[in-house]
Image (tube, rainbow, N blue to C red):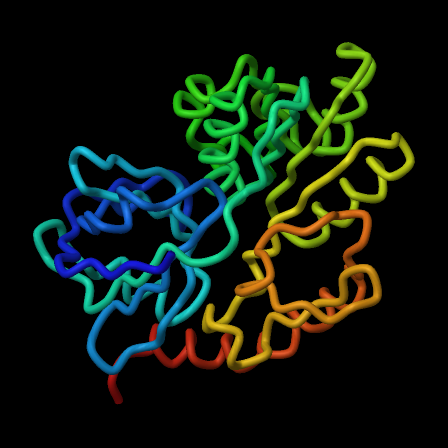
Length: 282
């Protein structure tokens, strides 16, 4: 059910990694009704762009939600200018279908880069449903890792892997999955969130290993309502819209090649808008 909150004060912010910022803001109705896997639509200021952002955590008692945002364009850059005590124009949600939760046994949650944030509430919920949760935090290097403490609390165990070996083990998310499969003997469910190439590689591997796999395609959402068509993706031969039909899908049925092409459609426009913002008023 979609709810509206009326007070969107920023109560805390933290720099987590290069160009990655945590925002904790008041959105009481969202905080009490959100479920793992859902997102909100945020508008920084009146007349501004609406962007969908996955809820990384929530505190119903405090009436706050936590968003972790990577600065990749004009609007996410504008967010960095909001100071504690100031407010956002709009926060609408929760939106999207919640993660399907049930007790299956051993669940592996894989967060790659900025995907560590949205995998956090899923790990929490999977463990609360009675599963044994092993989580993988994967990033290019140690400076791009975050939520170590939060993920340890949400999981029975965590594994850290970096491309350059600067923290944890050296390798990719797929290497971590192979290791866990060998050690655990059986993985009953895997959830992966991160860059599209990572989710594609993970899904190809888990298909060969026979591991049921969910991926969250939130990186390709645009307006979050299904009206723009920008997040259309083919799943099992059928067209789906990530924001209204997902954001989670069976990773073995997603056409990742088509998804990659679609994700690149607006890249040049986004780059130009970001560049003009960085240049400032002329």
